[in-house]
Image (cartoon, rainbow, N blue to C red; front, side, top):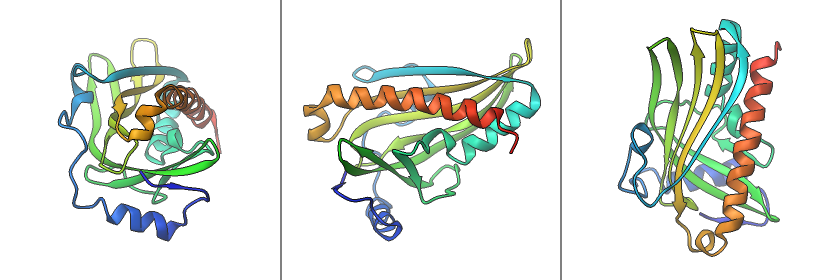
Length: 195
């Protein structure tokens, strides 16, 4: 997890991601967002009502695949426009406490399923060695047939990875809570937008 005093350029981000290309995930419980959380991870599960109906669902799914849930001004995903297909490596660029950090992730799986009256679309990624945390994050949009409601669901399992994150864990948890709050709002705004 490289730290910088200035925002990294696209070339620097690409070079950073190239160092992670042939590496495996930074944890052994790969796929843990599909099942019950393993011991030792902190679970964060957040949901937001986005509205109702097919148009809301379609806008929310498009926003999810465009990484709107992670493009919050102080966080962004690179390369811009990266697909959410399994195997895609991305850098999460974060500005916090006066500096920038680069965090490497790889998309694990995509979701597009309909069962028990719920259509669910999304994906999950896991951390690579150059990430401050260790774990997975799953982003989904759900359309419930029973009441036509559309929901954003953010499910994350994490623990500190980098020594600085372990040392400043209360600050890391503060950033995780901020991310969840602002990610939900970004998806609410995206689902309601007609432009």
